[in-house]
Length: 106
Image (cartoon, rainbow, N blue to C red):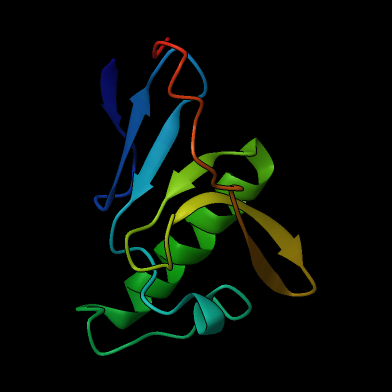
């Protein structure tokens, strides 16, 4: 596994055998609000203008690249993809299920 820091100070990308996953730490706080309207900021955004710009740029990149992302402020499992929806975006969580414990981790 390797880790690559990307342009946004709040993200890191891990490269596993398949697929790479970007950990988008504090890029979003309330998915139900900020996916459809990424320009909306919250008190926790220290620089609100920059936070909105970074969020919009990141969402556009994640959508374009089909990036698998992990976001800790979202409901479990907090891992999925983003797609464009109208003038904003939509969260598509991965489908979580118990893995087959009879198989070794590969």
